[in-house]
Amino acid sequence: MTRLTVNNAPIQYALSPDTPLAVALRDASNLTGTKIACSNGECGACTVDIDGRAVRSCAVTIASVEGSFVTTIEGLARDRDHPVQQAFLAANVSQCGYCIPGLVMAAAVLIREVRDPDEAAIRRAMSHHCRCGIQPRLVEAVRRAAAIERGDETVSPVASPDIDARDAAKAVPALTAPKRRPQS
Image (cartoon, rainbow, N blue to C red; front, side, top):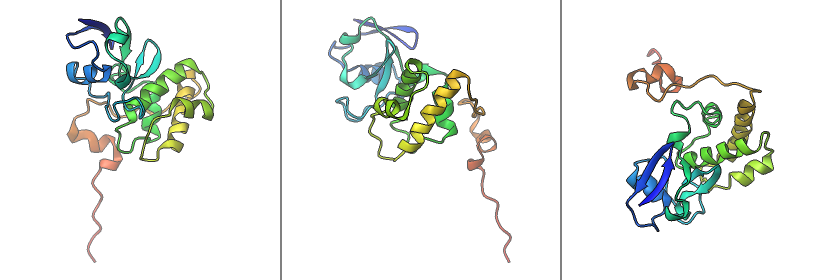
């Protein structure tokens, strides 16, 4: 049995010790926010916080992180009120969304370590592969997240993830049906 603390809960995995952490998180713990894409630590979609470090979880085994504290995107902030989540939502960073959980986790670790990261520090920490072209918005969102974390800036809250689907269009104007123009 491999023992970890995942999102502040003790977990025992009855899996082979050489199981990649990303697989254990997704398949055994049903924490599907941790994405698996490249399976060799290159893309960053599987990034989680392990003992305060941004780690690509497909590239580490559960045995190698036994006894560690792991935080996934699900454990970062339930109401999407972490400064990185607020800034990413406000800047509409997400395109397809696949790499976003890993980017959020890497950014959360960065702004905890570096109070006011410059563009070079952000680009080093955000070395994830993203085909959607979000990098310019990403850099600005991480800067904004750092400002929110420092208390220098605030953003308007976003709709709760618990919002009823019937009420989503009221909370998110882009989901409101367009008004029909009268026929002439």
